[in-house]
Length: 562
Image 1 (cartoon, one colour):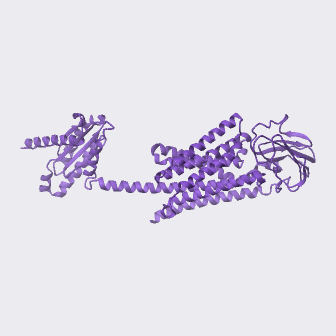
Image 2: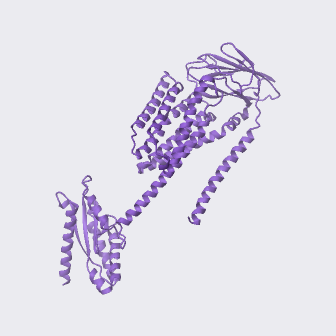
């Protein structure tokens, strides 16, 4: 490896490391700057009244183990009294799942509904930010959580009170890393999808790159909505939750198709994978239709999705893969990616079901670790695909080099006889119905030049003729050196055939100019034959006719000189 290569690669890695260090420093600095934000709801200061009438006093919402699944229309009351020296405006951040929220200060409603809550409406999941106004030194706060329709995990929500000007900064500091991961996934997915789509239009081999991009877009949308970072821009919980679940339901489809593409390369049966992809897409469409009609909300179908997710995992595992010892280097990335993906999916389903049964993690944003796992999955897919493309490019370059060596005439740089015979076979493909012409050339006086001026001059004469032949015909045909002093030009298409006479005239002018400058006379006999001259054209017959006409011209030239 050259020093220049080492320096260029080293510079690349240095830039990447510096960017990572810069991001980490920024993250830690931001975290440090918001770590000292004062909270006014810490400790066992809350009183809970459950829908069944049971009361719990001195409850710490951040560390309680209470669990209650609110039914439709039921109310859970959470209240406390603030008695502190801070008289400014506060903001309460309350996480709810398919539930409405009404807030009161000193028994006066400050937010929520001024009419009976529509328990049938789709309310969504997420944080609700409630501004607590200034009403005096002592403020009695009461929050009523009203259960909505749907099968949601509704543990006792955590309520965080901060100064209003610090509310969103505190939220972002708690989830900054995950926010960065989600935004990075989305941006990366969009960029890869755009690049992959353009590349796919040129070369179908880039289809997996489009799939990797779609995986990034869907996982980015899911991550940003799941960790509720979207609420920095939109407080429509119903819409945010809809897109969260839709992205989640669609995510297995491009993953399965990526697996299908890999198995197709290994010549394995991919029918089951295609069926699984169709089922996932149909499920997503049906979920949207049912949600729009109000029959079943999209969140209520999560258990069905979990079943389909396990089925998809079974399809991937059941199809099998290469032995590790037989894998190429880039396939190790794929193996690691799907190992992380499958393990994370299983943990996700198990943890969610535990939350439903026992309330574990119900008062926080669930499954946030999945954002990191999906980011690792996406990056490993990208690295694996880049490795695959690198191998593919190297193979193509090697193929092109070998093909050039096999089909190139070393003296003149034109195609050689092997390429000429290949072109002749291709001309017999009648599927295109394209007319063609073959022009045969034979150098006059080559033997005389070799005998009088030497073989060096003869070789120079051949090289020079190849140059002017290429210059004259490169726009309309392909020049080939068939043997010592025999050349042909293959011309395809009627438009190009009509330009043959002009190209021949350019060749004759170039021959005359070379003859004036060189010690030898540049002159070539030629013959033209066109496929349209035959009822059933065959390249061999067209070539023979052109050869006959070339020799007729050569014979006439000798008689003229005699």
